[in-house]
Amino acid sequence: MSAHDLLYVVPKSTPPKVVRGEGVYLYTDDNKKILDGTGGAAVSSLGYGNHEVIDSMKTQAEKLCYVHNMSFTNEPAEELAHMLVSKNPDVFARAYFANSGSEAVESALKFVLQYWQLRGQPERCHFVSRKQSYHGNTLFALGIGKMVPRRTPYINVYPKVTSYVDPCYTYRYQKEGETDEQYVYRLEKQLEDEFLVVGPNRIAAFIAETVPGTCLGCTTAVDGYFKAVRRVCDKYDIILILDEVMCGLGRTGTYHAWEQEGIAPDIQTNAKTLAAGYQPISSVLIGHRIFKAFEESNVQMANFHTYQAHPLACSAAVQVQKIVRRDKLVERAAETGKYLGEKLHQTFDSHPHVGDVRGKGLFWGLEFVNDKKTKQWFDPQLKVAALVSKLGIKNGLFLNPGSGTYDGVHGDHIMVAPPYVITKEEVNSLISILSKSIDEAIASLPN
Ligand SMILES: Cc1ncc(COP(=O)(O)O)c(C=O)c1O
Image 1 (tube, rainbow, N blue to C red):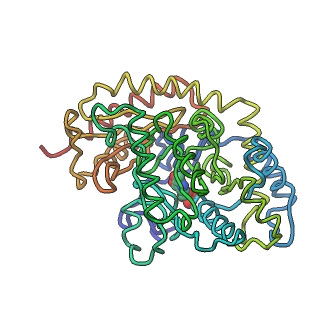
Image 2: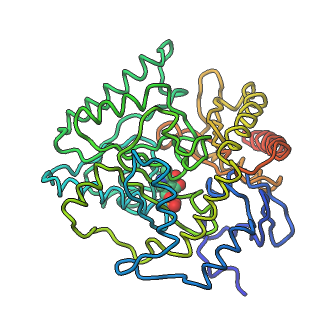
């Protein structure tokens, strides 16, 4: 069988072939054992090869794999919706299931647009988003986000309905001597000014990742930031969309990351750990305000996908979420995450090329710098984060790299987001391989 009929990320570069996964480890066809330190793309919460999930999928597969969702409902989808909505009945009214995070974001944006039409304000079709945000790879989601390398090839076709404000990114954007309160005030004012420039009556929603992953590497918001965001959105009757595709469902140590911010969204997206990689599935949790408009008008939802609310995918997610709740894995993520955070700080705070260690729960980022004092980044051509990741794989550890951290072009980071079931011994092993890989990467750079 030719290994070259498949399109690889870099067409001429064949990646290692993984043939098996067990616990936090992946195994390649040449018997290499790799600790998956980011659970793929922060997907794997239960680790690989969980037999309870596999068995429940087998049972569901025998009964029903697919059914046309425009004409029928199905038991796993109903059960999953109930599990998610009933957890926060004051916030959410309904759940919708798609296949990927991008589809969830795209659907949330479309639900919001249809909501404003139903409310008789179709001119509300502008979205305010944040710089260095990633909301997915379909054109609308990519257009709303600001991930430079993935957006650039399609720059001419994005709808002109988005403008951007700064993210809450203390390491780079909080000024010297500025208190957290002053920083929050500055960001709040910037957001309000943007609303006023566009015209609040034209704005459909503000969208943000509660804890950004892909582009910013787990920059946690300072206290009060999301309260300020909620305040400004409420003042102008603007919908707040929180994208928790990567940071949600336990990753940051609470079921929803926004629970730590003292606010709630009007609509929310999740994916990644929903079925923990056992099936592709994502969700949109729809708040009461939005659902009420749909319910009252009783219109057909315009947004539809063939595989939405897929029974097999939903059954995998139900089983994953049952295990997460039964085994108290969110609490475990918080506890192990505390240990991981302490170890990362101990090991890398004084590292000359690690400028910042940040994160919460099992969602951490290291930002690399050429000069720690001036925070000068490495030349983007050196692709430092990708190099650390590549050497990590050689040394038996996978970590997801990111670049463009500072402004979409400059800056490098790596994400540490292991499965919730990782043990402290495995955390120790992760840290020591990471340390070795960073040092090897730096040593290999040209002087
Ligand atoms: C916050 C966020 N939103 C959306 C997406 C898109 O998800 P997917 O790759 O499943 O389409 C991602 C993927 O990393 C993400 O991190």
